[in-house]
Image (cartoon, rainbow, N blue to C red; front, side):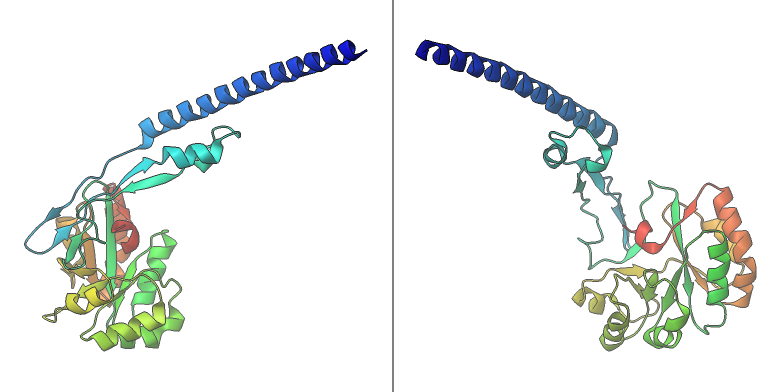
Length: 265
């Protein structure tokens, strides 16, 4: 009887060992398939940073790279199977990134994508909402440039707070502006005041205006249109009347109009 139990126990152990070994092999093969799929995905989607450049006026941002974090991605999928939504990434940041260059003026976005950005310089406050409405009807997002007084007076009329840029002449104005928005913003140099010195203290990047259109919006846009440009346009009735045609022209040339955060990501 004792031998019977002994042999039966050995038999059970053998069966369990065989079953467990097969499961380990299956799991190992499954995980190998996951790892191979992650490597294949990375080969197709990884890309290195493409640097920008420095000019006398300021910096042209590059395009940050992106690569698959294979260890984290594998950890997410282990025992589950390859799922693209579980992929995790590491950013391959450029040297000429906005984060690394707070002390330099930004003059345009990267020259690798067909993206541009349009900023309405708000002065009277009479036309910018109509200009935003025209853009909205075309599913285009424009940016608005305001000082603290304009922002506080028009805040209730502004739906999107993520595309507002700051212009001003003192650190006090900047602090008041930030206290209202609590969002990531950009400073913009509009006169002789070196606004960058105050914006550095707040770890905010500063844009220098290179392309400013006072009038003849469509004609001037045709001359300056290029990858990565930031077009500042005066808030006026004339520019309001030409805005729709200008947007149509920009799109017809294969450019995408994006908000400033997307352009300068």
